[in-house]
Image 1 (tube, one colour):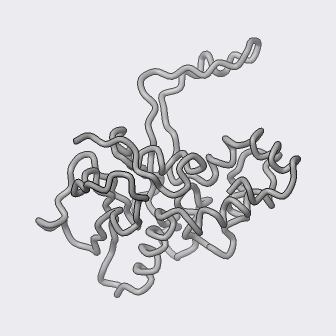
Image 2: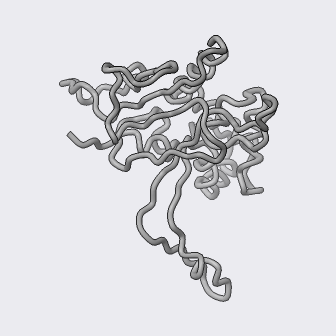
Length: 224
């Protein structure tokens, strides 16, 4: 996707702010127990120190509303941006960029590239489209990204979106959709400010967060 940038200045700006671009385009957020006593010491060089491990969080797909209407009460973030108010997707993405030096044109190029090649984007859109077609009696949809799939001898084939997960519409998990503690479960709805922690050894752990390194959703290491 970087090859679509037209000039040297655009490429230099992108590489300088690449962490901001990746953060805004990613599906998950990074979370850790930050030692703020060190981070807030502005009299010296900035220090980023954590206690424990760094992990990724996934939120529900729908932006929380006020409970009385369908109007969202908070800014869509991460995976929500891909499916919420798609006509304003670029604007929503720039609003959460947190870096005024991020170029809107460059962001539009990489956003379009994600829609073209990333399998997770199409999977999330499928969930949203299905939700809009469901009768009112069905309250929730879940998408399961299985942590372990059927082994295949074609080890070096490109990953295919059709192998990503299992779609569950309402109700409890059946015998054919039993989950392991390493599976990633994406919910259409969820309590306000709720987040789900992604298991660190899931094969999609890196590709959901480092989207500019793995734009086509490549599978990483998995425990066999």
